[in-house]
Length: 195
Image 1 (tube, helix red, strand yellow):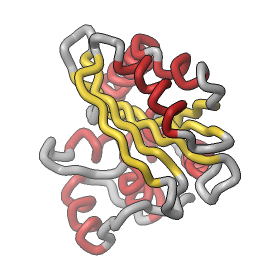
Image 2 (tube, helix red, strand yellow):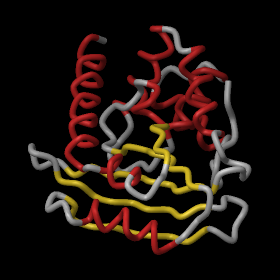
Image 3 (tube, rainbow, N blue to C red):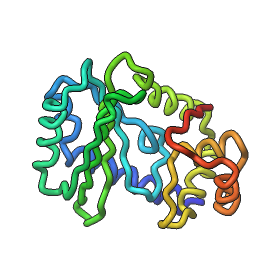
Image 4 (cartoon, one colour):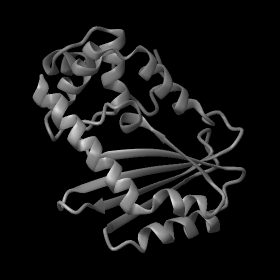
């Protein structure tokens, strides 16, 4: 039990150092964007999957400004790769950026940066999800989520919200239970559950 909590705390410390070293927040703020941490690091549930999630808000989606912010991030020699997706014409009203950052220990971190147009459906939505998860998270639930995450095979691709839904709503406590739960609750795209 203490090993899982200690590993989670260590990895969350590393994640914060990556955020600082990446210059991500300053780069986005330089174009007038508002940067919000969401996901597992925000809720204290980041375990061993090195993935940090940000939602970034601007009044409009302007590719040239978005690329200008990402150019500053990509100029960091620790950034090995960047991908971009234009989802402005979808219900998500966003640009989707991913950057892979090599930390001082040689570990590769994925920085997920979703630039969302203010006033659209997902404006603030995942911040509310994180707030709700944090509000209901007891020490027992936190340990259960971190344990299932820790026991997840490296080959499995799982969204953090799936763990929360399975543990908080449906009482899942182990990796085998979670694997069965996923068969009954396949995630197809955005999971809109919140406690």
